[in-house]
Image 1 (cartoon, protein in one colour):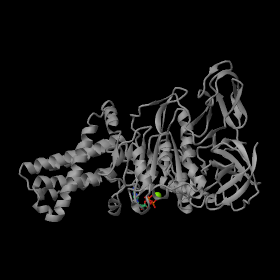
Image 2: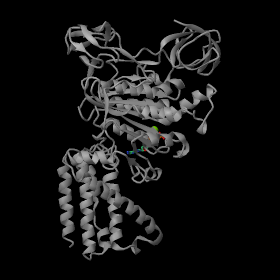
Image 3: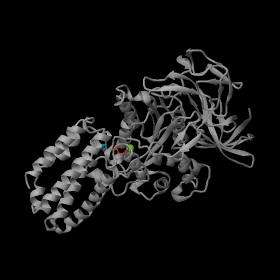
Length: 572
Ligand SMILES: Nc1ncnc2c1ncn2[C@@H]1O[C@H](COP(=O)(O)OP(=O)(O)OP(=O)(O)O)[C@@H](O)[C@H]1O
Ligand SMILES: [Mg+2]
């Protein structure tokens, strides 16, 4: 091992003499062996950023190079756990508020029931599945041949109990264990990237019906203070139809993060009836933790998502919020004397964001499975400025933008997803997928509804000036359609048992209900009925259907539709 000495301390950044490490190499500082990363090398000195509180570090302290970059330990036991940005286990929500000893990532004593799926003498390639461990009630952990290793399987552990640190196999002279290490800033290898065209069902109508994301896609949720970003991301974590969720809480206030964790910890998984935590990994960085652990946390999180992807699962990484992460990046670069670019962020901000979102994707794994990592990140610009660098760059790198609108949130229209400012580059692919999966009308309904919404918005601003009464009858019915779409389809209560999650069948039924009622009202007006009469109709059954019908009961919506349409028929 190579060793040097601390020359100067500046917050979390050290100057180190006498050490000739690699860029991004991990070093250990002082007797406490604080982890740090080499971020610059010049004139025989190394600049090191430390992933811990540096209050006790003095010039002259010994710094040792480890010979490898910042790595995360991966293995069974991640699911259901809460970790810091370097994937060190936090024993519970309470620990978030204090600064204490932090143990390693995995429990090294626990014994797992291991079942081999290959036999000694087999030829195995990198990424191949060696055996399985029931990690939680929901997810089977697949032990893989590590990337870069392959050859003849010389030995494999028999069926039985193993710890994460005991060897389970020997491949081409290399011992393989359940626990492996991976440098978090490097994407894990795959056989190939595959076109992402299967929708990820979030269960949120405003997203799935209008701005769909694919398995392997990416989405940003920009929104001002208190517009509902965290609630929306949590709804996605709870209800989306992925196998594994990695939730990175980035720089939120300590107590807020503890609340989030407690809430998720107590939730039942709606799909399995078991605990949601059984398929969730939480990475928590509060603003009172070392800034560098926060900077690392999104890469750590995406590395964990890639691990489960490589086992053949669809994983989703949720980061709340990437703006707090970018602030950590800015704080570090300002201490290293790097020349700041836009608004004090380092020039590397755009490439750092790109490197993060590029790790989303649908792939064929090294073992040949179809699997994906989907990334969803909140963007919370200071002062609600949507043109600031983090938001502006993020928009270039993601496939979907789910923009939260402060006016909608103020009017308590939740989720406050704007239908005019949001977008999805995957609409056509998802439309094709629906067309070949029993819903050929998906794209036409979507277009019709979006056109009605934008027409209604335009008419409403005119109506505010001249009064709705002076608009032509037909346009008044368009405004009515806009209201029904907003209240009956786009709004979705996260608190209602029937409404919090909306599966595809009910989504389709609700949108058809509103569009059919609109067509009938339009026909009435065209047939000579006064618009005022149509506006007076009690259509509350239409806007309440989302709460009265159970999630798995689209027929209940169809019955409401039949009743309402029949009563409208009597007006003719
Ligand atoms: N879908 C929803 N249903 C009901 N209430 C909601 C919903 N979304 C947001 N709210 C309300 O808005 C409040 C703020 O939401 P949230 O904390 O998600 O906002 P945020 O954008 O994450 O805020 P911050 O900028 O502080 O991170 C919530 O406490 C809740 O009262
Ligand atoms: Mg929030």
